Image (cartoon, rainbow, N blue to C red; front, side, top):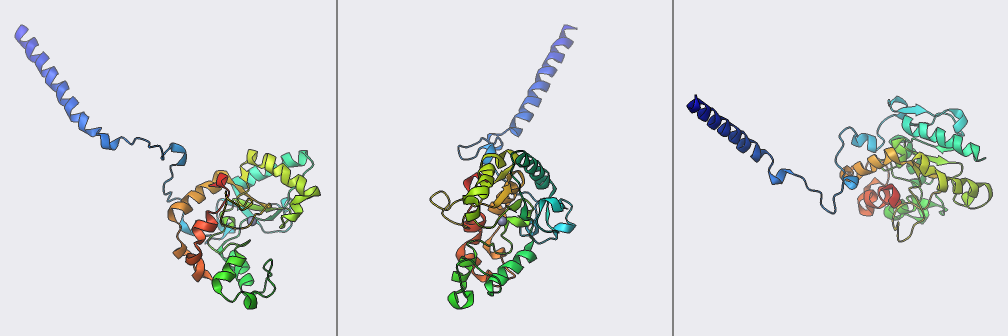
Length: 271
Ligand SMILES: [Zn+2]
């Protein structure tokens, strides 16, 4: 009996030892991902295949997209604008809160797809639509790069607009001047103090050392960051200037560095 107990104990010892040696190699040091000082959970981004490049570049119809809704007329100044559901829910809450403070917001523009943006861009490119600060764009700016840079002060090249995403809205007035005094200033001050509580931020802030590149300041343009930040991260990883094509002037996108300087040339809070 004593002999059997010794044999059994020895068996147990080797069995345990064997399983221990077998499991050890599976936890090799190389597989334990230690965070580095540059890589913290908050800024770690990775490719999300559920967000397609076509979506990022506005190559879809918002009215046929499951996540998009038509904005009710009472929030807009014209019919037929679309927005992502989540952006819309938060906007409605912000709209109601502002109303309590005697401030009213009207959406002047929301989702615009590639084709819509192409219409705006090419009308400016061909001089059929006015570009701020230019009399005759074809005569005054014959060089394609110069012409594109002028239009890029306020308008995006198709494929590169935040309006493609259904997360960005233009409110009340398309001039900064309007928001600098009286009623407009009250509205802008309210947005600066409160919009972030509803997830909305101003991507195109004043240009300067903090934001050296990109579109000019737009006090009317607000972005719903809980969604748009995800898309900006995908742009950082996957969007290339070579993908920008299919409209007049697209050939200068690479020379200008549109992805880096314009899509990503935004307020640091939005990056
Ligand atoms: Zn806008």
